[in-house]
Length: 525
Image (cartoon, rainbow, N blue to C red; front, side, top):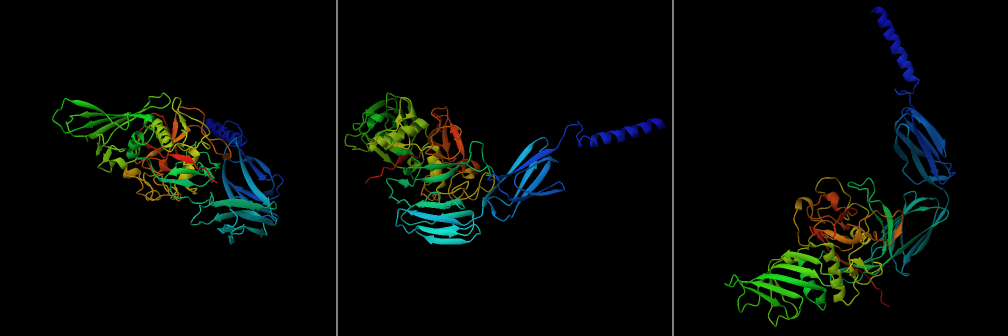
């Protein structure tokens, strides 16, 4: 037994020596990781320091480490004469066994730089503030030419004007270099409201969300979008009253067939009268318990069918309260009498009704319709159509953000809890769970209400991945199965109400989804 013990001890020593020779890997496979330091532009001679697991290395330019123990490492960009760092001074990365991680440092060669600040239209004395690479702030007004001593990151913020929109985005970041930088700010005129529609400025913004935003989803890839056309956007969500009046009134009755089920207080319980409203042959009223001389029964349910391009699509069927129907011969152009505020609630609709309602508005204004009701496709490029339509995803997010880059137009998201204090002042959502009248919370900087919460809002786009890189006037996929909604609804958690959040739905779904029409602003000379 004593000899067996000696052999066991020897075997243990040999095993330890064998493992040490295998780089601490029990399988004998190399378990080290690799890290590449790469500098932009190529050939930049900036210095750096690598630290981690007791190892400290310094160097300049590109470098490859192929024998690092897996774990956390920091790369610090050191001050180097002639070069200016454009990123965070220190980067922390995780090195994994048998994998290579890359750390990229962006630099610019230090040199005097020229900055042009151009305010449009000419003669507008708008104020602005330029933050130099060293943090000093230069305040200016109108178009100016500036010379900076050093290269590096700079930021220009356009100040607000009373009668003109801030350029979009209001804050612009750039890199001052020997090539020079030009900031152009277009101060577009604020036009008066047009029947509740706000004329928004054209501009650029970052669409999507950064990966470190709470609630970020993989389909929210951050990318720059430029919208080249001004467009009108309804201040609020469309209401039940809007739908009822839109389907029945105006000069475009043939766009929808409307059936109203109504109830009268007469004693004849088994009798039903069918009344066709004289001013609109497409409005049919079924009256239960009719009284012989009562021309104003109380409406109970409205059912609306499409009647355009040969379509007979069921657009909606909903119960209504406090609405009386005047079917007398002298009812005039408005047969409805609303006795409660229920009709002012935002209406929950299918995508098809949302598109049809936009076309009703177009017909009422004598504008071309934007949707073919046989296929429900747009009749052309949404950015050139002049009628009312649903916003593209890009237009919706641009309108919601109103120049902000945070999760909400009212500030960043603070937690993944149901409620968020930065959202409370602008949205009905979360623990406030029920549909509310619109325009009771604070608007965003564009004057738009309820962009977060209350009801999801249909966009015109099919759901699909974003295009990569900067885009101009983007549209969604040509076809698809699901349409995109935005904004969250009255029972959503805060993360669902984020400006970047996307929620695809079947176009026939109509629960907690509403409408906010837009139309192109046509310049008149």
